[in-house]
Image 1 (cartoon, rainbow, N blue to C red):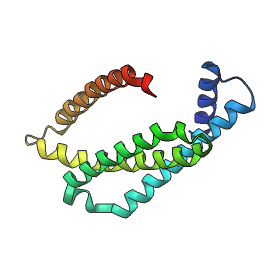
Image 2: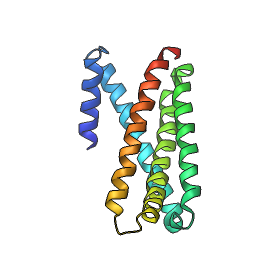
Image 3: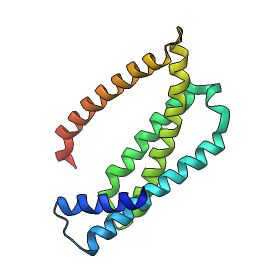
Length: 149
């Protein structure tokens, strides 16, 4: 999937007017590299935590929320240090990826506790639907305040 990601990112940058040639390609490579660093961090984190997610799902869910917030803060601050894009984007991506692993693992345990009638799929669907609705709301609010940055 990484070749596709580079080409897709490059095409998206050209489509929004960044231009053609080396600049979108360099930006695409940096974008995919920061994603790769994020994926690697998630794998290392998952291996380090291993089977402890079930024992304290609420704590890991809270940690994932804090980590996602930190990742967003780092991303929002990136325009103040454009020369350090790759470093900051990689740290943000790694933090977000680690949060994603913790969130998914904790969510599975929490959802299982709500599925008292063997209806894990229905409980998960309801939780995912609520999550998507809140994402739409959050994105809408974010767009309204995007002029600040």
